[in-house]
Length: 530
Image (tube, rainbow, N blue to C red; front, side, top):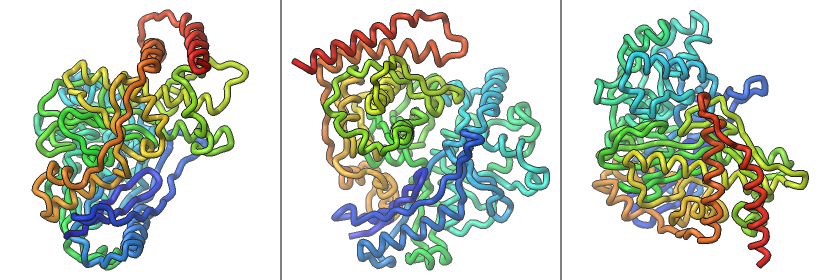
């Protein structure tokens, strides 16, 4: 029997789960940290490294206490984090500012300029991230920071790190950028790193985007490794504070959704919707073509020996929370009774752009759109329509992936929301026209646990660990009547999505959408009375 710690840093808290190689999950402790936003700039979202590390200490000690585990038993620790969450540091690895969190969208201008220059100079890397560089990613955020920092602060800049690399470096006692290791997962999907063109984009491209980037490429250095490699051992300082044994192995980290997919049982041919505050859509395959509009195609990013594909929605759970907040209630209360709704009965068509579009349009300047309002619609109606809208958006993404050779043999709904929302899972099955599998239990932190067990030498491979540890599935089958109605609604959604979300869209006849929404809603209400 071996005990390890799986760590999952989310947007608002860190979760530390202790796992037993024979009996599975022992227990979980969660510790919150503040997310800094400002009403003056809705794109602003930061977090302090010190707050996150304090929360990690607290959650680790609470997990040990909760489970009655002696910290000296813990044989390894692995961690995943949000991304692209970027921190700039000095030459002693001290943060110069807070993290630009994944949901910080201030760098949309920088992303547009990077995209334009990449196409102008025919940079191959832009094709591997879907043809557009995102405002959520590392180079855009670093450039935004450089443009808005003082000359004195820029002079102290030594390097920038993704969240997973910064935490691993801190825990293993790295005090100099020269000793850094970097996650292929984070750097491949968010920084255009790929061994195909020698790593990061070339210096001449970066300088062409902005002379402030001169010399920065050399500073984003280190060993670029997949997560079957070790980052290092837990330092004596942090071991003492956490109540663990010094020197236990910590593997190279990754982005949370990518390891969540592993924890959900993802294999080649599967697509995992990691549904939380946003949705990350993760697939793995042997070899595939490039996919326009997706977040990245990166060898070794999810599974070390396969190619990882990432796409997603910029907001899902955050949309549900916003609807409930405006109604003066909570999602759990507002969702009561939604299981009695019929497909399309609200007459609303809700585009999920409240936080911009991550995939396939890659456009941060979009905003939420709801068509079909009348005088008696309720917040509960909007919540149901929002669930339908995120499912329609997911279908657009899966169809784009399939068109370009990504196998979609199984659909798995992972992340935190599907475990507590049967209505959402059924909507997804009906909209996608496919069986949707949902892990029976809590898969969060299971991906990091699998990587920790491998680092401890307990399992020889991801597949062996998944066979032992992954949860069984509950299957949601498409309901024929709902699937047929959603097919009609999807055609309306798809038309509105590309017509309203594309700057240079061809003229589209949208005048039929509202009457058709009313007709479909009336049909749904009649059917539900039968």
